[in-house]
Image 1 (spheres, rainbow, N blue to C red):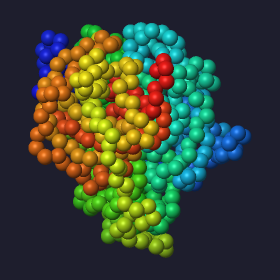
Image 2: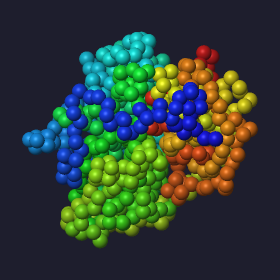
Image 3: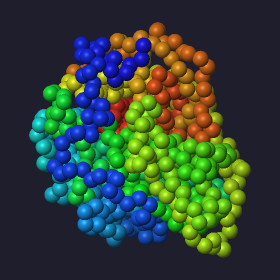
Image 4: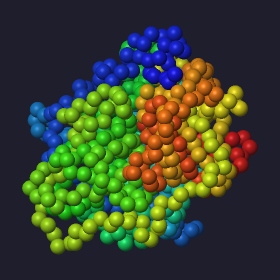
Length: 609
C-alpha cells in the first residue's frame, strides 16, 4: 500500500481521517494575520513592466581582486530594502511598498530579486557573502517556527509559542553548481550579521570555478529550518554561465534574452508580505507553526505582480526559473503557440523540443524560445493550470495563480537578425554525455508522517533491509547513510510513497533521469530519533508495475532537480566528482525545512561526522 495524507495518520496514530482537515488548503486560508489580506482580484494585471535581470545595470560587478588568489571578488550583501512589486491600495490607487530582503554589493544597492551573475565557463571567481541584516529579525507576519530543527542562533532550545526576536541566520547556496563542499552554501553553514554566530560549516569566502557548460544556475538562501522564510523574504537571484557552444548557436541575446523568476506570494492589505503560520484547528500546533506547503495568490515574475513585457515580432529566449515555495507551474501560451525548449537545469538539450505545455517544479529551470513573429498587435498571456499540491490537489484559481504574465507584441522590429533555432544545440560539446556503468544502486524513501505536534512531516530515508537500525525514514541530523566514493557513478532510486510529487534536488551532481515506474509495497510505522512518526517500506515486498517510462524529451538533458511522482520509483544516475559533504532534499521549501532533507558524503567520512 502507498501512504496518503489521510491513511498514514489513521494507521499509525489512531487518528480519524478528519484529523487531517486542518492541514487542507481550505483551512489554511483562514489562518490569522495582523491585518486583512490583500485581495488579489483588486490588483492590476499586465500593467507593470517586467524588469530584465540581464539588463547591464542588473549584473553583479566584481568589487575587486581577492589578494590571495588573484581572482575577481564579488562582495555580496544581504540587506533589508523597500520594494515596489506593482501593488496598489484598491481604495486610493496609491502604490504599496513591501519590506523585503535583497542582495547587493558595496557599490550596487540591494535589490529583489538579487543581481545576476553573468560569467564565462572556466573563469573562476571568489564570492564573499555578508549578512547585513543588523538589528533586524523576522517580521511578525513572516515568522520562523522555533520548534523545528533549525539554525537556532540563540540556543533557545526549540521553544513553542515564543516569537523569535534574535538575529537572522543566512547562508547562500549556489543551486546547480559543480562546487566544492566549503563553497556550496550548505544548510549548516549559516551566519548571523557580521558573522557573530555561525553554524558548524560556516566559510567566509566561496570559490566558484565555473567549470560547467553554459547554463542557468541560481543562488538563494539555504539556512537549516529557515530556508522557506528567508527565500520568501526575497533572497534569490540568477547565476548564468556562458561558453563558446552557446555563442556558436547565435541565440537571442539581451534585450531578447529575458530571465523569468516566478514566485507566488501573499500580501497584507498594506503591501507587506504574509506567510501563514497559524493552525488553530490543531491543538498541538504551536503559534507560530510550520505548515505543509505555501501557495500564494499573487504571482510575481522578477519581483513584479503579473507583469507585461512589450516585445517585437521576433524570437525571444526566456530563462524560466521556478523560485516558489511549493507551487508547480504547468504553463501554456493563451493563443496555443508552442514553447520550444532548448535547455534544462544544467545545459543545452541535444536538439529543440516543441511543447504545448511547459511544466516547471520548484527549483527547476527551462531554457525556451517563443516566436512572436506572426503575432503583431496581439497580447498573449502565460497561464498556469497546475493543481496544488501537485499533481492531484486543488484546482488553481484561474483568475489569480492561474495567470503568470503577458506579452504585448507592440514594438517595431529592429534590424538585428532574427535567426532560426539550430537543430543541433551542442555543436561544440557533442551530445549530452552518457554516464558509465554504476558501481551501486541505492533505494531512497520519500514518505509523509507526523511530528511530535501532530503536524504533517515529509521525510527522506532509505530502503535497505541490511541496515535495520537505519532502514526507513530518517531526520536531517541522523547519521549519514549515503557515502559514494570519489569518482563513483551510482543509480539512486527514489520510491515516492506519498500522495504528492516532490521535486528532489541533489547538490553537486548533474544527473540523468533514467526512467520512472509504478510500484507497490508494504509500509510499516517507525518512530524516528526525534520522536516523530515515520515509516519503512519493506524492501522484499516491492513489486514493480508495468514497464519503465523513459523521461520526456525535455527532461533528457543534465538535471539537478526532478519531479518524483506519487506511487512511482524515479531512477537517476549521477557521478560524484568532488569530495565532501552535500545534501539531497525536496525543493518544496516547506518540506525541506521540516526534515525532507538528508546529507550525503563523497569519499571517506571524517571521524566525528
